[in-house]
Length: 114
Image (cartoon, rainbow, N blue to C red; front, side, top):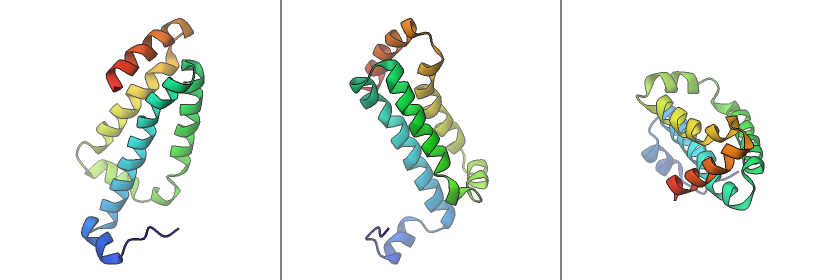
């Protein structure tokens, strides 16, 4: 796949490989988390959670190229691990609730993300 960006632009934006891996990781985490409101708007809370969890599994599996660098980056970049954890935790809370509470939580979730 070609990103259509020159090597000079790439190095200006991401001076090190770690910078590129971190930006990719942040972007993928944000995209995964941002998908939750749309899923809740289109699907039942239970189905939205199922589809979101499938996306989460893909998110984990797609870290293949980053497996060597990511642990060190997460350990060395202040706040990166906590930021990602907090985003994912907020979206994941829906899965551990009984169905009756899930709908109430989904309404509250929609309000906090709009």
